[in-house]
Length: 281
Image (tube, rainbow, N blue to C red; front, side, top):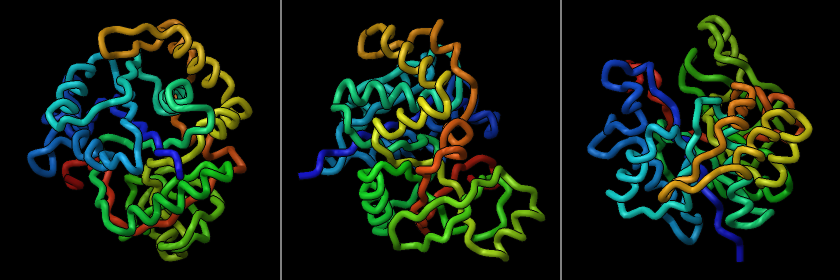
């Protein structure tokens, strides 16, 4: 029987692009932008299937700890832990810290599904099929991201070039492209083979941490010591501030995925938006 996957939900962003509704004190992931339920709660609902998932680990800023706990309690969704970042340091160190914590709680070879908490995602049959493909690839040591079939030349997404096809398994990443200007986005759309970078990942904790050791050792060291020196505070785990502050302020894409030889992508066509602007909302 397959072991359940550990969801890692990233909920520390400040959501400043949707001001004035989204503010530092209550960023967009905690707002009900698409209905009566917040984006964070919708993310929790996507990982409720206990046959597929363990209880989720949430990584958030210490200022949002009670919002996270309250919104999870409203849905009666149990959490495996709420990890508190003392300062903002982007996604690389947050995911590495979660990987160490997941190993401590669930075992060395655990597989993680990393999800942003501020995206609006359509959970169609294609979503679950793509996730199954990603899990199978992760079991072989690959670090998997999801590439969304582009509908238009968007400048708000990064792009992934791959020969993958929607409905098929994982394919090697040929290159990553930072958020382009409109002219380049149109050229990529015309050329084909480019996908929007969804910001969701699936990989084994051990595989990911090994790549961190090789490609982003400062990030790995800060994450490891931050977890080792973390202290319990009620239902929260406070990462050590002094060591966490030593981590480079970089994304997981830049620190690991753009450099590793193990990156692969599963092409998908389900609806996904980062709601990064009022136009997108």
